[in-house]
Image (cartoon, rainbow, N blue to C red; front, side):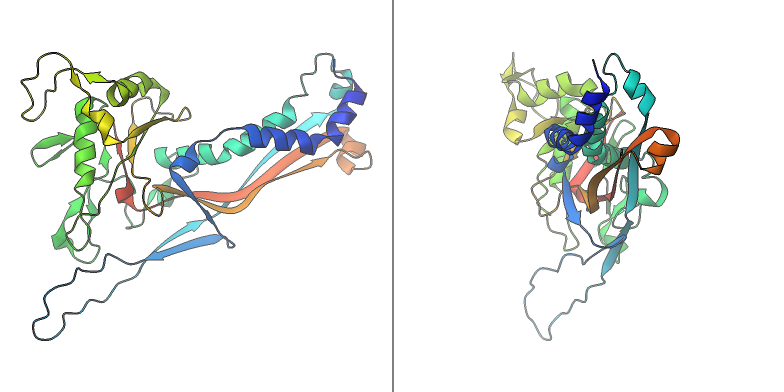
Length: 325
């Protein structure tokens, strides 16, 4: 039973309880999201395209001049505030308020996962302009320009929802299956940069909702596989060795995903991961519980709050693809 004395002890040790709950709460977004500290409200990213390869020197030098590109993200403040009537605390017979502060800490730790999920799925507050990626179009797009300044180099796709996309006479991606996975993996591995050479994309992480866990695990982890039915491999009798296990792609269940059917194939082997967490301020916790605090004195209320400043943001579109029916 929670007594006023126990509650007083709880208040005194709030920092310990919050710190322990915060540190013990697991998150998974750092496995596909790079933390980028910033000291300003607006994070500005700049980069240049791929430098052309060396060519035979015949006559005068052939020259190339970069056209710098930029991407900006505005950091957003977030907060959570808990207000508790001290009389309710005094009369509490079941200790129902005892878990409030650890819960606040857990929610603060999950902040990054939740906001990264919202970015992936286009949910509030990452709508509108926030869905635009580094090339100016929406991040999930069927026609990203290979070269912003030379349309003759064509486009590439990283959105294979809606049943997949027809590319080169083959339906790439779509609802999760062995074939959808294989076609998307192979397509991503063939993406080229501005110099028309391979970017060496190496998909190594398959992010999926809980609803696809069994099928993803069976596809990527099983020792054996049913007879293949794509390409020219049609004569296998009985179970075959599961070639997908040798692709080196790890499944990662993201329980916070809202969609039960969309899945994501990421390359996390490069210098930056498929998404970024632009961090201005880690969560800060504070409390108003002293007897002479105006809120406590005038309104018999205890207040607990936290706040932080950050923004989920995109990395280059070719580092990831989404797919689904």
